[in-house]
Image 1 (cartoon, rainbow, N blue to C red):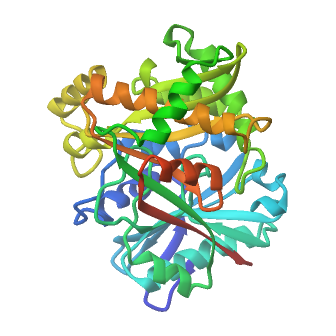
Image 2: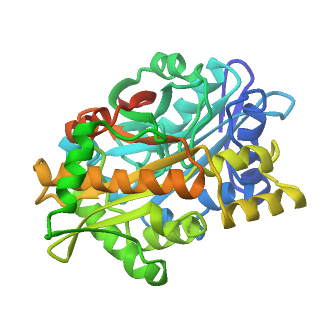
Length: 391
């Protein structure tokens, strides 16, 4: 237990009731933010529960609550250690001695500072020498702090934090180590002539086949995507292998959102070498159905179910794509990317009524993907910063 000078008491979460209070505080803290999208409460509880989220098969986590003198919850944070991240090369951002915190919410800077210090102490006691934050929970979920784009809601599976946290985190001694970039574009318009020519050229190449994912073979297709993903991202900053259990868990969660014409697999001479996944923006409907506390009414559940059955959206998000390392930095890699983007663009407009696309996040030093985003006339709409500090 830590007691701050301002009579703030920080304690570890140890009971089911406290766990519920920890989850519920995110709704309370962001109730006045018109761009905050409440996520389903049950899913938030599961996300931070060992036995529910397979992330905890290779990670340790401690949740903390901050209360004022009257016992009211005024802040929260999660500190965690990912055993897989500890095995990664130091030059890729993670590595031995690297711990994390995330899911920070606090009423004031003093409370935030006390919570951060508590998370640091927990990590230090477990022999961590460096902390990277915020991570909620891993690089595959909601990494980084939103520093640009507070004026519009996040898309599905993207983080959203109050602008007040940036100076508070930096005042606690944290320095940025990586910028994550998101792009938006008008997908109702055709891509520039150069891109269209590249796509047309690829369509004439008999070695190339770009196909929809086969939902009747969902598990097999998920395994193909996982294999390409781990190969494609292996040398990227922040990479931590995603496990079979995690991909199965994520696939189950996303299955209602996954549409065959929005997930493309590119084959070269019959061998899968690239993929692109696009999701209808679930947050558009969740902003209307989930209430302010993540608990939809009966009518809300009906509306959510009907939307999942036949989504009509303004925005599509590309959360993941990958090209095998053997093809990266080649013209063929860019061609495959443009072909998949174009096919998904067409399907998004024709079949779901979408007019806007969001691509990201993308590492600031990923020259290939940033170049592709610019070639299709995308503009930066959100930026996230990942910070680090020596303990």
